[in-house]
Length: 269
Image (cartoon, rainbow, N blue to C red; front, side, top):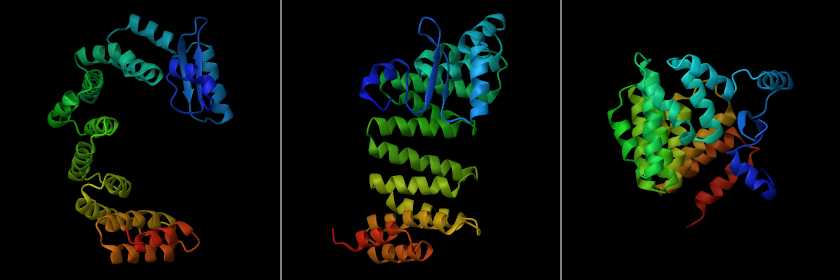
């Protein structure tokens, strides 16, 4: 994947990250894959499983033919096919899961989300995703839905819609008491990139700092506070941004990044 000479293979097998190990049959059709680093013992176990044809795509398809109403099998097969070949290739299984009676509510909502995302991608129109987010009540699935909608807007470079969706997602997570420093920091930093919702971003990153554990390390504290400094700078509150950088420098005196940030804030635009 690091070489242009392998572009065709990368496209054929839907490779998006390395290392990715793709296992194919004699016809070149993928039967399974391993994505990401694994320690040798775990990798050998996975290799052995795949070599023995256990829970590969052909094996799962065979199992499903014998037990077509098995929701667990459908989820495993749909997830594996989607990771290998993309959502479109997995839609048959997600639709089968959606149509099953007596399926767990979260699984049913997950299948509905996959269908909404598929139609949004195929039509290049977020309407089905927007409708899902606005009408779904399953709090376990809604975070995935917000993420899918936000990524859709990001891919279509609709910055205003992306920012609004991200803000709604953060509001939703706060509403179910699942906000975290990482979530609030990611939101605030993205708003500095988009240069939108900055006043709200400042409020949220301040909440994120307040949520930091007392025993949080100096490096982690400085990274979160840096986001607050960036937001303040984008808001034109230069003195406050510089003061935050001074705190970061006290926390991480050996890290030149914070010195560079302070200098950036002090340089007239």
